[in-house]
Length: 378
Ligand code: T4K
Image (tube, rainbow, N blue to C red; front, top):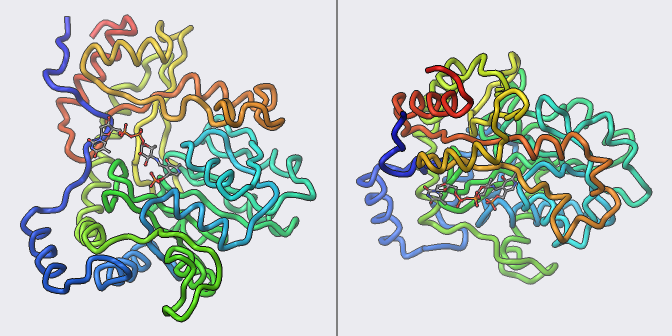
């Protein structure tokens, strides 16, 4: 009989900067007396991040949700925007906060991303954009999405919250679409405690985003439009500068853990694993399995509860599906019959603990417990 972990094993444990290095940065900020409002740390972070992510232009924000809301404003979107239901609530909410109607499009079974072949049938005279999500860091079919957007004169905002440093054939993920949004929440592979960024190809879009995150002002000479307060502060920017030096190592360790999970859970019937895509540089933000009760013996929900009993805190990302939320379930595109794949995936996915501080023995024990619970001899 396997014993539970003595302490909870969470899905994630944040990456932390070296405390001495952080103290040095704090001293610099203290001496400058500049705590927020586009100080030196924020400027340095924006410069370093745009090179790191291969973005032409980049702005940082107080969080990814505000960044996404402002991306819609920057592109002056209205009417309807086609998006995926299989995502975190912030994707659809950012549209609703702009009085834009989210139109849910079903997803692909292998990547969990928006199914490009279904997008065109959702386009109406009110559609202004497509907002796909690179779910779990796996890139969307960017080529097909671009073709559709160009054909219909639509904007594309990628929710790249999970896709920090992902590349497609060596092209940075930030190089696709009109705008990409990256989340720097503490649960992400790279973070600024709370925070986010938008990347742009057009300098005018950055100029508007910078104004909108600062109440709509430019150079303090007037207010051009109603903005908000979406600024990142100097202390969080310092965390971001330091973590940029560590994120490569974090991704490398996550790759090792992912490969260990894959080796140990390979051939467990009823458990489906994602595989790397040959032409993609992956970043390993989550380790997600799919659980098929008829073959594994337990449903996803049963496995989730049993793992809790062993002090393994997994997460049902993304359940419930956005289209089934109380606030969206009555819109026509949210109907379960039009979203069969997304509904099925949301019922069967489970994200297991994955972060750079995990030790191999924890992964080995988690996999042994999963096999044991499914009735495998271990
Ligand atoms: N688009 C997508 C596709 C997203 O996934 C997200 C955010 C956004 C947009 C919006 O970006 P932000 O506005 O957040 O920048 C988390 C995060 O809050 C959220 O950022 C993230 N996606 C989402 C997928 O997950 P929860 O509610 O699952 O997190 P929580 O607090 O339960 O944390 C998970 C585990 O991590 C805990 O069990 C313990 C551990 N943890 C967490 C925190 C915050 C720590 O050990 N230390 C910590 O400080 O939402």
